[in-house]
Length: 420
Image (tube, rainbow, N blue to C red):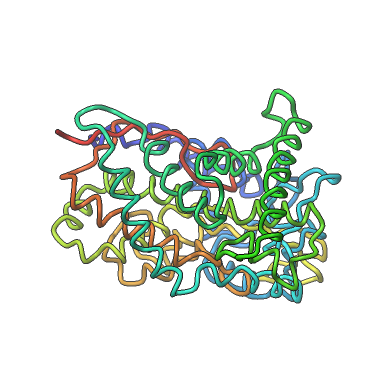
């Protein structure tokens, strides 16, 4: 893909607008800016002039935007003051329907958070990752070998979704032939119900279908004489999870689906897009495949598959000169912290041998740091090891279509071509 295709004509206008508009009018949760990949100058101005900024969005109301690396760290590592509990609003700026709350351990405070997290943590223990590596490599190779040469196809559907959905099916020991249901439910839970023809009722209906499906799997596992090494079995046997209410079970299932699907699949797509956008780095990778592990960290930094996490203040708290009041919403913009020039030099560029790439904050910090971060890195690492064995280049043919929201920062479609 030529550099001309990669340039976004509106970038210059957005840069001018971001630096000239009244500071109090900047709303980093603007979905249009995310969908057009035009959010960057707004974050840059906020980091420089108002790293803790009172923002307003028509859908989300008033909230604090925290955009600098250090301030995000201060919030993320202070769960005593900044709660992620669903009872206070949860982890996204969107509150969700009051009559359809989904408790999940990432949206809980200690001690319940810790007890439930420990229940599923063994699924990504080092010995499990080691055992899965040959399977991940075999599947990755098979998917890549099935791709057409010399013709355009969608990388998102054919590779990123397929690989992550197969891994999810393995983690849940989910019926393999139904694995695309996992993708559908993952996309559904982060969809604004108002965009659906049937509105909120349709949205609820799809998630209740997910609950019914997983309830059948729960009943199968709890009655099994030979317990497996899968997430559902772990939940049925964990002291903190075996007596969950249905909506809490659904919440934790949704958490594990989104955590295992959106983050990895969008980093897989982002890696191909990024190396096309920075072709000298693609050449550097081909010349030195030993850089693949660092590439994984750098891509996860540059992509930031989940743009923000929300917290709610449990008490008045001063952060970088601003007084956050008890009950205020606080958005930690990981997507901005990962582009903080005070931490990452030339932060908007992909530099695959970046010395501090592992300082990326896409997985969060503190007690809520992503459980499956090592598995995600492993999947990206294997993908690129197998790509370099097979293809001279993967060419992105045009700008990808992006996810319609400010929580999942991802891609819905990206046409690519593998040269003959």
